[in-house]
Amino acid sequence: MKSPDGSVTATVTHSSSNGALSLTVGRDDETFLEPSPLGIATFEEDLTTGLSFKGRKNKKITERYDTHGGDRTKHTYQAREATFSFVTANGTPLDLQVQASNDGVAYRYRLPGDGDVVVTDEASTFRVPEDSMGWLLSYDKRYEDSYEEIWTETSAEAATGAYGFPSLFEVDDGSWLFVTEASVDGRYSVSHVEVDDANNEGSDEATDDNEDTDYDDDPYLFELESRPRTAFRSMSAPSDHSPRRGG
Image 1 (cartoon, rainbow, N blue to C red):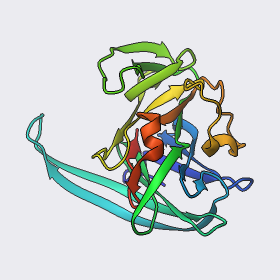
Image 2: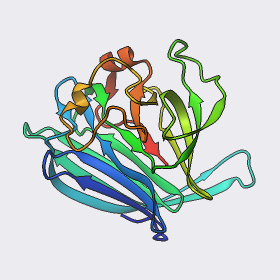
Image 3: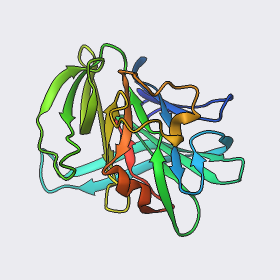
């Protein structure tokens, strides 16, 4: 799918071998986000693999809003949106909603149905191009409520450990990738990213079956983790909503 002016492209890939999903983002024929695995797991079922494609719906988005500061106060957001619908072998539905605007791409998972659902894990990742430089906020898990570290410059290859949002990468001379999360309003756990299996907790059930991706010791693969992990596993989240990831 393309943004309204055609410059930004978001490509969702559905693996024919194991039913896993990935997202690639580019602009003007340059890749900003390499194929990055997607998926979510609940207490009832793993929705990261074994998915069958059911359909797609497209629509155009135009939103107008005001702000109280900045160079201008009136804003217009335009994007193209696609909702990709999948289902597991047990009939459990999963929708992946993707928006492409002239400034970037955002996505969210939707779990159609009534009531709450316990989310146990995500397979969401961000695979940045090789040779990318990053400005990253070190995330010290000893202080789970603190985002008071200083952003440091490092290559994506040398990055290791946990980092808070937002994360900024220079993927080419003068080309930038900004990764963050939105719609964090208390109904879903906030998160951070980790590199080189920084949790040191062994493999995750939500990613073990995704054979298309080597999740261990990949210096360019920033894996999404919840904050804190234990609360994430026991949290109840609305079945129709999760945070939007964007870049």
